[in-house]
Image (cartoon, rainbow, N blue to C red; front, top):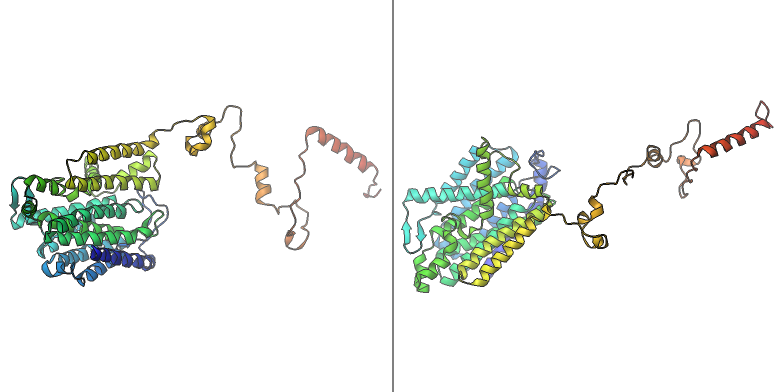
Length: 470
């Protein structure tokens, strides 16, 4: 465990330290695209954050290869090298897309090539564990197609959910934590060395996300871009492929002595439909499926961007940016850690009740903006302003609403204190005397006051001559 923690900390530190220089490089390179109609941010923000994340990945793999226990993964398996090769290709494709833009079909082809490279170097699904049946061996073609499908789906699921500050990195970090707990239990608890690469991938993925999150939280100073979202999606998919197609359930059966216990332990691998272990990407996958169905139904390309994603819906309901991100975090953690708890003890009533209660709480928070309760006058100071009756009430008829706009004359008086009447001159240097309070505004004249002032001026003028002298 200490070696995994060391790898995680080194990866996070390198990613965090590289993000600042990468941001300056992205600004200098012009990797700051104009704001699109579907974007949520209001100012152009540099991309290419995936460069720092790829640096953290390389640093994590380098440190892990020099450690005593974790280093055995590099000597006994080619999976880390396969991950690095595929990550390099997908990262390069993402950098090109962040700077110049790449067609959607070209990106899809690049994702398939990166997955194929990992398969060629040994990171592939060899068999599928089926409860009660055992391992079902796959032909090389079947294993290749299944591996490529898992990688492409996971990459695009993470890429589609990357729409708010800190959303994709936070959700993948939560998935990586749950995945690490599950893989570490399989490796350390049952002594299955085949789960060690997936455990290492999860630890490195946590470090990449944790190191980048401080720069990406709202308001984000830099975006990970496709170079980052596709990269972390590929790393998560590599761990899923490794633990799905490399771990032999018969070994767990030999340890536990029960096929039922093995099925419960390996349950996250079977959900959903042997594609995504731990159901950790249930929320991004749901968003991906809804987006493809929605765009296809409208006659658009499945890769056509729009504002119909789940995070956009949360903003439309009335949630703030930060609350929408936290809600997505909550559901991802509930599903991911719920799957891990189910694999540990599926018959526990406490786990089931906890998941049900937390789901109810999540639904209440999700639908909270739909309800705007009104409180009595005496309780208005105890609730947020938007729940106050007077805050949202319309002004009554015959009354003038209180606004920040002043009268036309008053606005000129306040905005131009130095304005003077024609023919007059300013006194003092610079036209204004510092350190003195402005003169009070003369009282406004009513009709009666104006008549009295007119009579006084007439009497005063009668005592003067034609030349103005008395």
